[in-house]
Image (tube, rainbow, N blue to C red):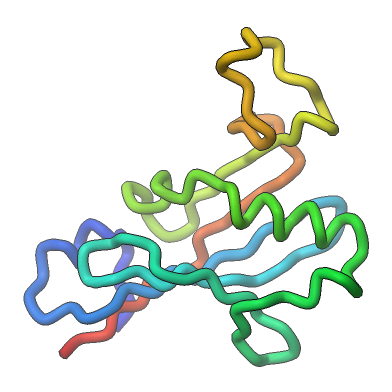
Length: 131
């Protein structure tokens, strides 16, 4: 069953799994992925869509640099933001190599939230599986 917001699932009985379908775009490359959450919204797995199949391990050795950056961003993104967002929500990140952060060194991270960032995540849909 599709729901608009993951918080809706937390109020329902019998939820076994919550799957969030997303995509990430950078420099014309788009990669579809899904977050597999347990019944309370904790991310268990990330799967990537490759040729109509969902896989856990993307073949990063044969990927171009943009796809490698996207995969790295997916693995390090703060997806908790999607837990409080409705379908269609966007999260924009930047990477230290693209635009250095202008903050103290002890606060810097490799990927960081930036409303003008070129790495864009979109929450496409939330699907729950009931017992």
